[in-house]
Image (tube, rainbow, N blue to C red; front, top):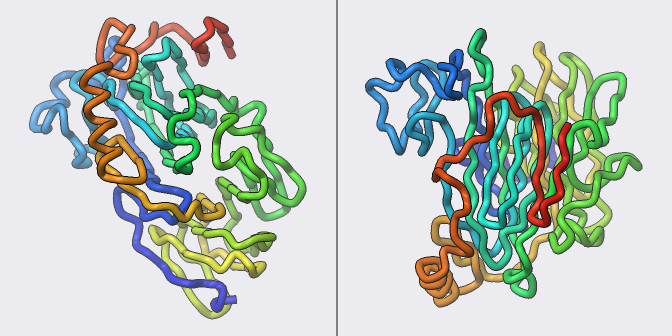
Length: 333
């Protein structure tokens, strides 16, 4: 089985990805009790680099937030963001007028396309206990033909996401198909919307001291299995420790054994787009000239402007999980 492993890569911040994916980051923050205003006690902010706090202190980070952790408004163009919130909550606001609060296993799929601004804040809703956050954000590229597709905002509520329960494992099928269990449709102009591209995003939990088999793909795709929590896993005689990405040959079915702790994985798979990639911060195009144009256009138009009162906009503390779409449609969970 170890011959299915092409290479292993240490997991940093962010994680290394393969085409068609551009970026993947894993946030695990053990936020304290809230202060009643959805942030930590201001005393706990002392000694932090507020506005750019990416150093774990007391188990958590503020990121670009000043009073509430998260990422105040920023632009994107040319790709998609897929945000999986397993623990805690994310408050979304964007330049389309869309908004939402999601968590508890929900997934947001946003096509930036021709250009959008959004904010992603992590409100500390619980004042009586800690507010742990576990979140993945994945950037999935768009091909040249779809770089300027209209921006799109879609929620995949956890109640609707297929979860396959086997004797040894739990597989959450966010994109693609696992053993006949098909994920919900992604955003309509996504690379994942064409099933020929075999895009798959699976969050896999495997019990300790058991076996799990990844089925082989039917076409040539890139496949990386990110081992982010557990003790150790064995591919035949080859041992892999946690906090490594395992690049696999997807033409092979592969079986591995877990060690003394339950093992958690994120699997990213897809047909490569195989086009030039030019990246600068939040913009992903095919050429440096297109990046410059994106920067110029953002300075000129702000991609529609910011319709919310604050750059770090959050929603009412008492509000539950919800999504407000650009057309005004409101869904409350």
